[in-house]
Length: 259
Image 1 (spheres, rainbow, N blue to C red):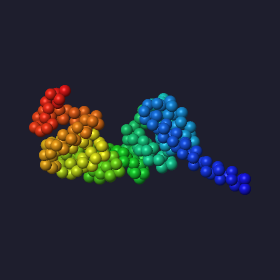
Image 2 (image 1 turned 30 degrees about the vertical axis):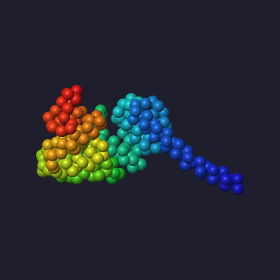
Image 3 (image 1 turned 90 degrees about the horizontal axis):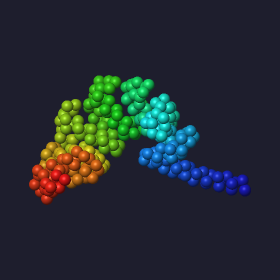
Image 4 (image 1 turned 135 degrees about the vertical axis):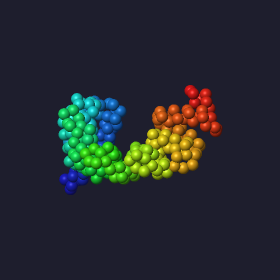
């Protein structure tokens, strides 16, 4: 009976220990994001060597960017590959971006980039769809395919990447790679703005101000400009100042606009 009780206690303790390790790694991830690299890596590196794919990806990022480690493309690829072998989406994306953009001593390889990005897309990584779409727009590694790129951008937006919505709206506004369609651009920007994306809010404000893709709506434009400015979007600050100087309404305030 004593042996059974000891075994039961060990089984109950293991999940708690695992939760503690997970919490420590999440805290280290936050430390890394905020620039406390030495403190973060003291937790990340042992976890990476123990096989944790999140830690391996973070350690790969440290080597790739030179944040907390001497920059090394080969070591970055090594750690990203270890995590990718476990199916970790962010590591697959990182390998795709290295292959796409190259590093010192690592020439770009568009076909390899496409392969890694395809695997990351299979894991539902929004930025992988975004990167693959950009390759299709630029004609990197294959003839340009704007229609397929637009489909990938829409998927990235569906997965929660608002910057994909901004890129897709830009295609419809410019009318170069796809037929110009202000209404569709506006609807895409609405979705991205609802995700809290400042650049999307700024562009949508312009469309409301000018009546692109729908009626002129100065109230919506003013509100969106303000929201975008609060998120640090400098282009929105310039446009808001001009709007407050040149458009009549309760928002008209040339001295404040000048300030």
